[in-house]
Image (cartoon, rainbow, N blue to C red):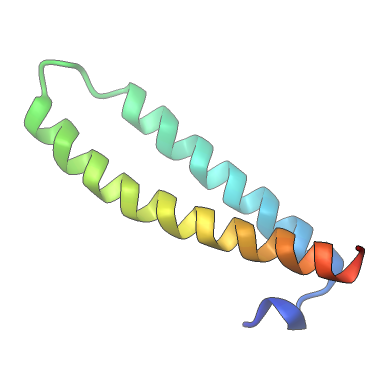
Length: 70
């Protein structure tokens, strides 16, 4: 769904969900020990893709709110 079609409440909810998902990624990273470097590297690559998507979505949600309320 396009951001422009979302209500203000839906945008705020999406921002909240986005932030929660990012927090969970950071917590998962903390659970992997330093002695598991191969696993950690693979996980970080996966996390970076997800973080980039979350960041892009976050910017879109906040830009739409700024557009509505300059």
